[in-house]
Length: 309
Ligand code: NAD
Ligand code: UDP
Image (cartoon, rainbow, N blue to C red):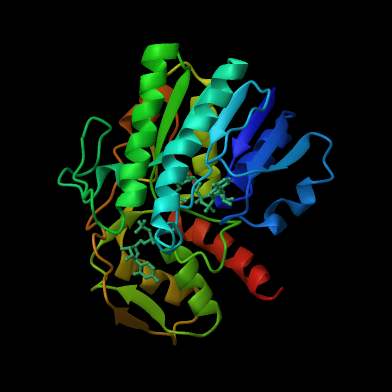
C-alpha cells in the first residue's frame, strides 16, 4: 500500500514510518519539522519506498494513497503552548486537510488523538465512553480542545461523507526518537540524569501517568488501521505510576547519587491518568508488552547516544 504519515519525522511518526517500510509499504512522510527532526528520518531518505514531503498541514495537500495516519501536531506541553493559536490551527485546519486528502483518495483515515481529551479526569481509569473534564480557556486548551475538535470533525465526515476512520486516544508514550529537548517528563528525567543534573519534579510528584513504550503503541496503531473496528480506541499502558516514582526509578537506573528537586506545577496539569484498554484488547487483540524498566533502559541507551552526538 501507499501510506501517508503526517508528522512522520516526529517521535512516534519515525517509528511508524520505519515499521510500515519494514512491512513493504510505500511511505509518504509529510512534515514541516516544527517539532520533528530531519535526523530522525535521514537514514530513510535512501529507501526507494520512502518519500519526504516538506509541507505544513495547515495548508491544503493532496497525496494519492490508501491510508492516512494523521499524526502532525506538537505533543509536548512546552512545545504546543509556545504558539497556542498555531496549535489550534494545526488541530482544526490540519485535520480538515488530512481528512480531505483521505477522502480524495478514498483512503482510510486514522487520527492520533490523545488522553488529553479527558482533561483532568474524574473517572478512573478512563474509558472511551467518559466525556472528560476539560478547561476550555486554560494554557492546555489549544491542545485538549484542539484534539476534541479534531475528533469532532472526523466523526462529522464519517456521518456526512462515509469517511472510513479510526480515532486513537494515545496515552503518554516514550522511547526512541524522542527529542532530548522535547520537554516531556521521560526525556527530561533521563537527559537530566545522564548529564548529572537534578531531576525536576513539577508539583509534589504525586500526579500519575501511565507510560507506554513506543513499539507497543505503534503495534496498536497498525492493528487498528488494519482491522475492522471503526471507532474510538484508547491506546496506552495501564500500569500507573506517580511522577516521583518515575524520578526514583530513573535515578536508580542511571546514578543513585542524583536527587530530585521540586518546581512549580504548571496550571491544569492532570492529577491522574490511566487508560481503560478493554476496547483495544477486545476489538484489536492489543495490549502493551514492554515493561516499564525494559522500555526505560532502551530509552536510556538511545539518549546516551543522542547526547554524545
Ligand atoms: P512530535 O512533536 O514528536 O511529532 C509531531 C510531528 O508533527 C513532528 O514531526 C512535527 O514536525 C510535525 N508537525 C507539527 N506541526 C506540523 C504542521 N503544521 N505541519 C506538518 N507537520 C507538523 O510528537 P509525537 O509525540 O510524535 O506525537 C505524534 C502525535 O501523537 C500527535 O498528534 C500527538 O498529539 C499524538 N499523541 C502523542 C502522545 C505522546 O505521548 N507522544 C500522546 C498523545 C497523543
Ligand atoms: N513533569 C515533571 N518534570 C518535568 C516534566 C514534566 O514533573 O521535567 C510532569 C508534568 O508536570 C506532568 C507529568 O510530568 O505532571 C507528565 O508531563 P509531560 O509533559 O510528559 O506530559 P503530559 O502528560 O503532562 O502531557
